[in-house]
Length: 165
Length: 308
Image (cartoon, rainbow over all chains, first blue to last red; front, side, top):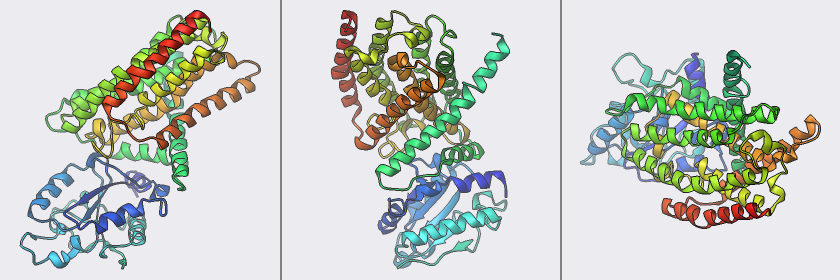
């Protein structure tokens, strides 16, 4: 395990990238940061700027316009960073799949390191995902997508966790 | 004292390394107490160290079209200044004779540097939100510097000297009416100098999403965070020296205990203020500092002159 990855796992700063989400995932993400779950115990804090971020949480569908913005934004993130898709929308599009503004899942334009399915996933599911991601990074099984040498986007989600309700 | 000794003192003790470690521990106290106020558990002891270590292994992004040299050098300005300020303060605390005439003036200038570094860095980054943050930092500094200097005048008038060693051996100003008023003014100014709530509008996480530091990543951001933590450690020591200096007498252990207690109370006041107040607007802050705070500071100076 490299020094950089070890340092990363001990202090994850989260940036929240909502692509026209219905707000349920957003609220559950904020729930995970409230005193009940208190993710600051593990050094996880929410930051306001993509330049300060180590983890990008993507929630909601990324329609034609949002997809361009998301790509521009992700290109500004300092490496190494992780991309975690929260909820069913970024994975499958759910009921917007056949909508006129739906173009493609975000997995097509960014390498997503972990999916947390659920509509919305519970905070427990997100914490479980974070634990699995940290364990995967430390054991070397998971290499952050931004550090992949090939240009192809990973086909399968690297890690998957049981969803919430 | 020869030149090598000064470099060692600047880099190790009581300069950069010591202040950085102590500052990060103070930052942990800040986060832990904040967590306790919010009925959370809070981060582990080494969390601020992990944060800094992680930032040092991250990529440094440079904004396109920004003034790159200035952008990368600005964080160093504040870091070097606060390390030097801490060194001067600690040398005076450890040995009253190891001070020079006018070191208080040097300290006032050194404590301006971190804010100056944030301003230069934000304007160099060519980001509109950073520019707003930088301009707010300028206005905030113009607001708090006047009452801060007036408050520092009170111990100077009482001791009749601008040498830290004389302030440390004089009658402590806190035992006089003017000293208490000046201390209250300094606590308000310290809050603004640290740019923490209620005077954190240059950053305004929820409004400017990082504000002045929005474009910074990796090692330069780590240096800004380190500077911030070191200021949180050093500024209360400045107030300790200015207003409680004469209380630090007796055997060594007694001096350390009194010094630590006073320092901790000052830090605790800062943290509690930060957790119990909302952010004010920049015009409200300027009105606050140029209005009531400056008036109280002026009254304190006049009282000090009258011998109160």
